[in-house]
Image 1: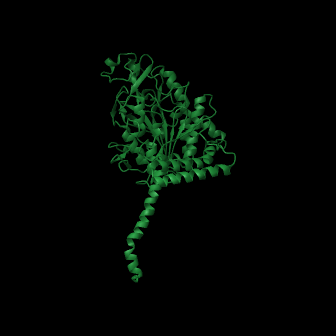
Image 2 (image 1 turned 180 degrees about the vertical axis):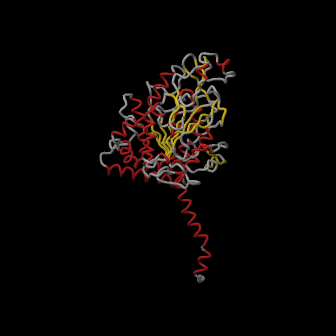
Image 3 (image 1 turned 45 degrees about the horizontal axis):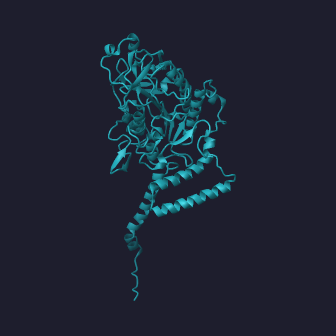
Amino acid sequence: MNLPLPRLSRRALLRQAANGFGAVAMSALFGGVARAAVSGAGTTRTPHFQPRARNVIFLFMEGAVSQVDSFDYKPRLAQHHGENPRTAIGKLEKTQFEQIGTVMKSPWNFAQHGQSGLWISDLFPQLARRADDLCVIRSMTSVFPEHTSANYFLHSGLGLQGRPSMGAWVSYGLGSFNDNLPGFIVLNGGQIPSGGLDCFGSGFLPASFQGSLLNANGTPLANIVPGEKAPAQQLAKRRFADRLNRLALAESGGNDALESAIANAELAARMQVTIPELLDLAGESESTKRLYGLDAPYEHTRTYARQCLIARRMVERGVRFIELTIPMVDGFSRWDAHGNLVKNHGDNARAVDQPIAGLLADLKARGLLDSTLVVFAGEFGRTPFAQGSDGRDHNEFGFSVWLAGGGVRPGMAYGATDEWGYRAVENPLEIHDLHATMLHLLGMDHTALTYRFGGRDIRLTDVHGNVVRDILA
């Protein structure tokens, strides 16, 4: 026998179905979060507080720029040039190669520049003209004296392979402004750093947040030009592959790697349209190209000029985090000056000096520098005494990096090394502090940007790091 259904008033119906309506809202909310968790493009997320910067351009100076030859003037080195460092300086820390020579003065002259009076050597004559835009940190330290571990540490906050890069963290935390471009792009000038592509990896974060590698010269990305003769043929293949992927995803019950692969495949299809336009500099004025150094006689200057100009175009198109590797000089010659310091640093500086100065000037002229954080850093510094006769060994105990734009105080120096440029003695900072400050400028609390993995909430700064508030504008 069918019993009659009780009649409910509208108020009773709403009262009894309230949890159901809440579940619908929660489903929509968490559905968006789930989609965001595997989407590196076109999904913006709310920062923790009002950001000062929207984008980051990370100028990675792999191999380690010598601080005492660039941004940390130490006249005492000239006074004691050629002396035994154990006598002049005192106790020396163990070096990477233990080929300790004499105290070595800088081959380059230093001068104060701009209204700020920042000391910069003539290794960087063009960048020196932008002194009043720079915030130079002279007291950075690392805990690794070897390139691979130090590169992982600088990029991911841990000196081991497999953790998410800071670019992946930023993309995960904030998303991208552009549906058709990844949130984290690495512009490769020719040298993949020690540690390989894991320097730009997503680690335990969804794979869609890893750095997308584009070549600045030649073919930017494999298969960027469709192989099919007709667009309809390519579209049919894409739809067929998508159906297969969706069936596999449904059968798996939900799989992060597969979801990320599908999202990346969809993004890759859109990139076939956007990347050629992005890398086409034909529409840039001749004065802009000259500003960056695209007409320079030195091939490696032209390569890095192209990288810097493309980075500006990426900022305009909403790419959140852009990293630039250095160009190959003489086949392979990063800033790792174990010998022939003058040629090594001279060649590498010639490659990047004008392009970086042009980038800062162009961003400022277009009103983009205030919202774009530019970071110039290597993985450690170099010794104030020679390695052998004319090189410098690795030095993790005190070195210089600089930041510009994006809410940083311009025209200032922060922290100091000792009178030799050897050890940080005033306001020493760790890489974790740099990461915390970068995230803060992007509107993120570094202690709250976490991802649950292996049974605990993990963050870029691990359990360390403090925002360096003295350098904030």
